Image (cartoon, rainbow, N blue to C red; front, side, top):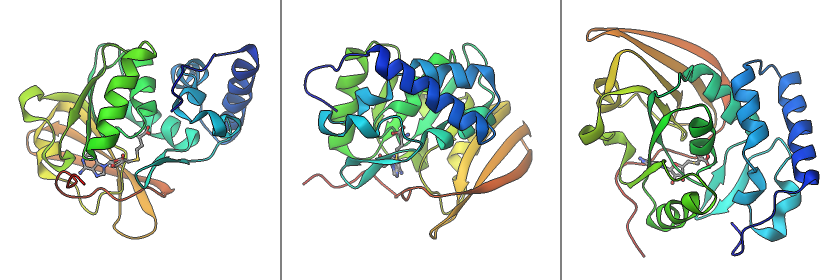
Length: 222
Ligand code: SAH
């Protein structure tokens, strides 16, 4: 993230159009998701010395050992989430805040949790500066979800989860969808769980992806 707010120039907007074409070729079809990727200036989330990387379809290091997910992955998870306008959506792993902005563009009321204090502080200050005032950021442990604000229409996990936390299933509304990359090793299987009613959960698996690990508890402050 740059200190002074970068400009969203025609060149950046052009690069976003190319990025959208790129992820369409990789199989993303939802027009609302594609429009959201075209709208959010991903280079705002990069330090000014790395702006040229912002519109490559690649993940990128955002410090504190964390990454901003690859645009294709953000789009893929957003598609699976089937966000409807005014859905209450909980995100686990705020990171840079980019995925949260995409969800906000899709019309969601976004609640997002980050376990690293430095990242939480940085991102929660930054999002309102770039116009995303309504995203609610929380410092906490995503394994516990956000019981005070539950239930949610949708929950998206953006870190590699070794298992499905019960709290997240409990905090979904009936009919709600959880999107979670599952797997403790190098690669994870993108998984959706639909909560049909309090006792019925329908699970589906998609391709493999690579995420940084979902770690238990808040990180210790240095
Ligand atoms: N959604 C982010 C991608 C973040 S990478 C973006 O758009 O940039 C995953 C993030 O999950 C990291 O910031 C990491 O610190 C965070 N994380 C890992 N385990 C967590 C947990 N238990 N609760 C909340 N956040 C967690």
